[in-house]
Image (cartoon, rainbow, N blue to C red; front, side):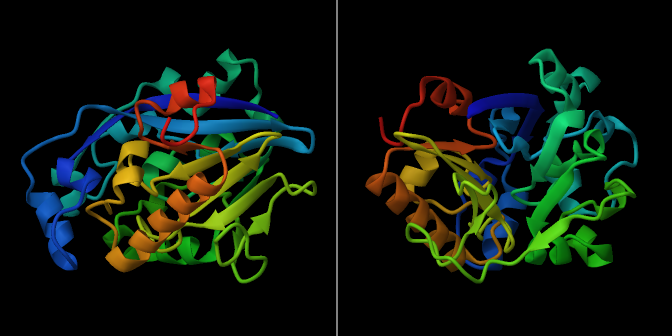
Length: 276
């Protein structure tokens, strides 16, 4: 397998989104009221060149977010808590072509979750099978999806994803998993927390695992600290996910790749396991 990282722009969020403060709904309120911004963070998408087909994990963001009215004006999160910077050439399609990969060759697109900075580049993959958890798809749909912070009205009209349910095949401390490849060396695991339907993708090489972790945490450092972010709707569930991920990394050499970690690309390039 060959693994690739693509930076599809940058995003800044409130510092208390990265490291949540308080409990229950107060965590979200604290995030929205926080006056501190993070530094501009990468918006990363990934590709796995696999003998069974080219796999993309998360599609990054679209440059259309700069258009007036792209986000619901009434939504407090988009008004108060996020700053995006994406140029057309940053999108995952052009980025893949610069790396010698053709988006038309992608067999599977796996979304860790459906927030816009992970699903905004879907329009580059009209002929690929898109995979997302059934729970995530349900939560991201319709008007209530908008209320929850998704932008379902901006998804491609052709989108008919394969919605998967985690109910069998426990794996390495996770209550369930789904092999994506027939070889079983790329699999999906449930990592609820940042969103209830969040999943991660694990690629297994000869001597280490690579976890494409979406927003399970905003960095490896935060994983080691076991700190839940400031927008997770259920702090206990998110804490359990962080414990499972850290437990995996302690049992087996694991390269951990959250989508907004400034050090993630270096760790992938140098194959640096968690804690090294």
